Length: 505
Picture 1: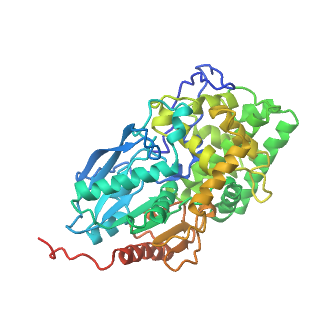
Picture 2: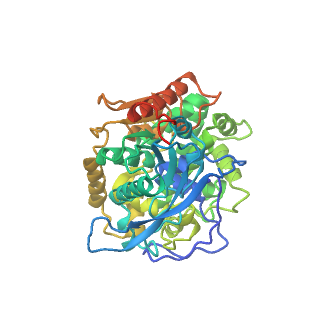
Picture 3: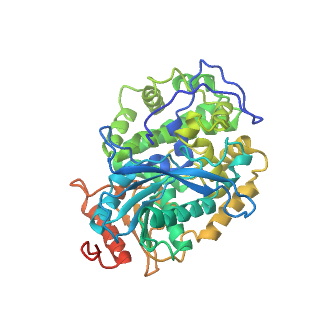
């Protein structure tokens, strides 16, 4: 999935009560920014522009049950998968990159540190597409009723049954050892698969694995603000603080015309509509995060901060507005920041709509509303992004898109059950390595230290989200090399002695 691509959508009417038709001459919101609102997987690195798919990678479709937990429901669907036998030696293990909230992408299987470990171990490589994402849908449309099969438990059974199929039918080795690798939500699935099926999964390397569900994820903006201090400058952090608080003060004072004009919104922001104000502020935070963290390029911080502290602007708010307006000037004339427009994008039930097929917005939104949370509020005093983004924005959004049944109690119960079922930060599992980056906000919902002697956790200083999944290179710090070497050592220990390619004929 390419997160830097911004698609133009003609906004359509949806069936939710609060939605309305938006005039066609108004540009929609950047979909890559909205994706970051719901899923850490939206922050995964992009394949290089000159990337060429490995010719040894083979496509397949696996038939799985729509509902694994109802013996009377015999409906099935097919999901995509890829395999690559370039490094496989007879008797070798199966290495699986677990699919997450995104369409299937061979890049993460073909060009990574996990791939390099697979080559050393003589492993078969494979990766799967998560149900409801890409073209692996178990239903005809994404109506709320049809999304009920989007549960992590269902996904784990898809994964395990597919792995059994690969061992028996593709590798002709039903006893082949299995090592999982995943990142973000996919990393959580990898660790949970080892926890629930230790008889099938021999070990899992989980990078930036979001294993702890939470409703209020205020640590996100706190850590983002602190990273701006470290990788940008104190001056940049203070400029952002002034810009957000100035915008909030002007909206409180009724100067919506000034703020709306400066930030190029299609209509004046309605200061009386708290949801619209919160959405406006939150999307600004995510746009800055996308600009600064894009593709793990540290120079992004300097580039963005240079613009936000440029002396040509009289105020910090003017500098912030100019930066955001210029960033999207080539793809839209103005921003429709109305809550109704936002809901209409998420309310689209067509499987092939760009927001669903390319970005998985409606599906992953349902998943976070019912199982995980991760709502990035901004009410902590220890961050520079104002104080108006509350949990109410996310609650109202969940209800507007999926129905009034999604009450606060239902959301809290979904998060509680996720942590209860999987153990959150104390899963009592074995043979799992949890790795995180020291400037990755999602480390706060991952495992950064672990007392279980049969599993381990490591944080790489100054590393971003999933930065450790890349192949070893001359740009790696000593700390990053230590993390990658640790991953290799743990995988080797889970497999036991390396296979001898001459032991069988």
